[in-house]
Length: 380
Image (cartoon, rainbow, N blue to C red; front, side, top):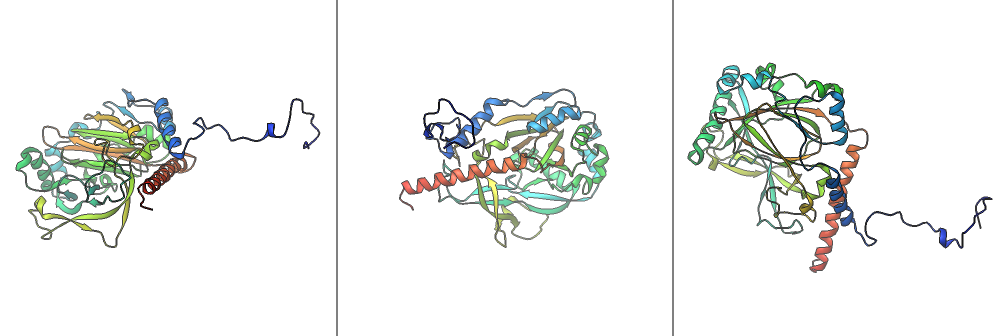
């Protein structure tokens, strides 16, 4: 009966030694949904409810600790010695850029790369009748001074302004290309990030807009060092573990187009939404932490968003795969300007795979819940 020759004392039967399921820490009747909820609540029990604030730059070793924990921080006045923070103004930017053509994102409501509902918003993501589109901005080249004037005019004129919202937001390493005449005003890399990560930034981006532009909740596969130069930026941050909270869906892709061609005096009424061809669906978060009752998943109420405002000269470390929504406030000149450094995420090791697994489990658990709801409603 026994394997080997070991003598066993106190064993009454093989049933006594039967292998049993390992303890999960959950109730015996726990479901996949319960496990996802436990994952989110346990994370919040073990992690800070506010974003740590630094008053001096971290050493490369200190920065590596933040990377290993995948936790953000704010470095107050961390870029105050950058030439950009000392020199940039509307006059300076116009003088340096002159009449250079820049790519301008135009939208009627500052809603570039966002989801537009086509049916009445539901309080739960489980509704199978909801429809929406993911709309990208109309993009057009304009001389920099014209784009800057439009950004300022909307901020200063308010409701009297009739044009679309303009945002300089190309995320294609534009500071080393499109805005290269400004590049010498910022470091080519962030020393503590370069040493810790062992690489140069993959992209350095320039951002210029006004308070009418908002960036919808999304995530990036980059370690992001974000530098606020002019005005203020307001971030809402969610960790990757909250993937099940954000109601990610595949959304039909579309783009804003202009009714009457590339006119110089485009009004916001001239923009319309055109469905992309060939047809494409974009996976995107449809839940808004600032409007939490709409499109909520069974897990959204467990989300604990972190909020932080960057003042001029502040630096934010935004870890890879963190969801973030961004709004902005202008300075006295009516603009908001920032620079960010994208360093490639290290896809080796366990973090990328684990984050994808967490996302997949959350999506599967919601599909199961949707199926159960349809069965209860007699739809299957």
